[in-house]
Length: 114
Length: 111
Image 1: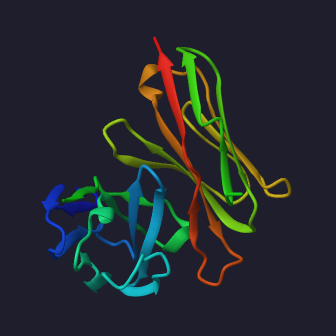
Image 2: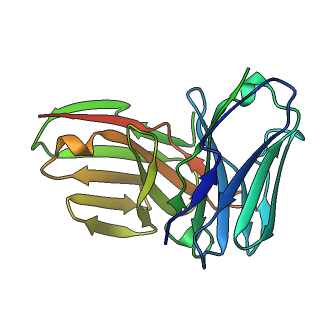
């Protein structure tokens, strides 16, 4: 298996633009997690899905952020409109079963909002 | 006070030394994770613990639920162990069982 795949790996955009980050979890994994990492705040959980259903989105910073998982093999994290403070590395991770199992992380998407 | 505290924040050691990184938490948990983040940014899950001890190669992770403390040990450390090690706990007190991260420990092993 190729592991968790994220795209793009790097994204540079201007303030106000819409940004869409994509994630393909490991086949057969039932849980998917979106994280954000910044120097100031470290790693933060944004949202997680179990069997394609969002379970907890309390980490999503505000309404500008939205995440979807239309099927077991694809998820998106969208920021609209983007702001400079959204600049961070966004990681996607998947696991077989919720938090009781090892999480496998994707390589991350480095987002820069100018 | 943060819910998850790691110590030390930075650690520099010589190759071959025995390394210990500590993680203390203030919430009730159902699981604790140790993650390793390489200098290039990639994150690898090392251990998931709910009790006792786990060992993988030169890495050993222990957890004491009563004392709300976990340690990550590295035996015979090597420069390739240089990375940031992150402790994360699953907070079972909050209804949605949120994963809470420590600030990380930056480990540098010199040859």
